[in-house]
Length: 163
Length: 413
View 1 (cartoon, rainbow over the protein chains, first blue to last red):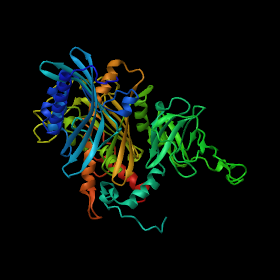
View 2: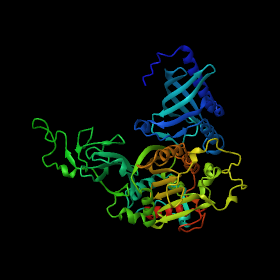
View 3: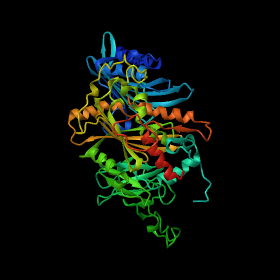
View 4: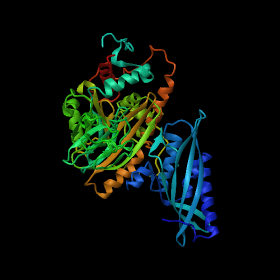
């Protein structure tokens, strides 16, 4: 996938950028309940490490193969799992877009997540690549697929909030 | 070492106590590397399936010590310290690969796949000047060899020349459980690596502790994957050095034990929107749905539903460890079973619904014990004060007591 972004018009680019902005706001503003709404019902959200991705291992850190599974990750975060309070700050860069067909585009960009703990500790928690398939229509854009490829093979302590 | 000043006095209550100090005393940490990791113990290094062909290698660890495991030209598995005999530099930087020989990038000292030194750059110098002394003997400068044994596809290593072979080290029940898992050829499906903000022993306690499993890990109890009321128990091996915590989700024998008790772990109004990934495919005739085995000191085998993995805990420093997960399936998995292993990976690893908490809880202890008085200790009397198998009952800390007894014996405490 070269994704030079040469065959996508400005309107499509603005839709993709707006979707990514909503994605970041849902997570970084702790409005995670609105995160599943950014995906189509039959979606794929998968977090993998570069180590596994490069070797062709599909083993995910997280994998949601339906919007229901996205909702369950939110339930886990809010109600079930135990972890120290923490927040993310996302930074995105290098967005490249390529049209797949009349209604869909493929996108690729870098992400960086700074994690801040209640103790004040801030760390570069995760950096890597978003590989997306996004459905565009008159109402806006939705993720059909977001594959998160984290460059580091390690997770520090645990991963509870989606990347 | 009778004249040695004792590092500490163990509490008189014995294995029901673990002094907090063993988690944050640098002198104790250093002694562990000598007495436990370089002592009469076997350490999981890798799966045989990861190095199928001559020249395939994988790096690993015994305690802090970096190790290379490699299959040589005759098909034998060798292990040696990943440390050039010249200056001590790491030989293999990449975690795995294929080599005809190992050459150190620093000064090109080169070793064969058995660890023997085969050449030294400029050994004869240049134009008759310089070079190594004429009596320099390559045979005296090989890599430090590690005794290695392949047991049922799990490759173990030890620095000890005296420890018994792996099978008697494990004992019959533990060996049988490994044979149960490795009953046919396996293949790796991926890895996780998780940095734990705690001393390595806090994870060893955690993985031997069925008491916490359904209290801390609310996902287990809420969604009825694992409750103490289900049929299950604790098996011990080698006088409690090793153990298996096992349960069968299909056999909840006391349904009323969780609801109405106010346990945080049973969240009665929570449901899953899509629980299809919890479809359990029966793989083992014994009906066990969860079996966590601990092999002293730092290896776990794991079966949680259809997820199969080996966990290896590596101490990074006094208060930091790294947990390496090697997840695998069988070569003859059909597409449905392999897909279920991938989806159920949501349960395990650093982002696992039922395992992520283990990443944080050790850190809570590590931070909680800061500044403790030397006399203060963790208390482990659940299920009694002795070390014995607990068939049918998992509200017990017997396997932790087994760990601490083994630890005391090796450490001389």
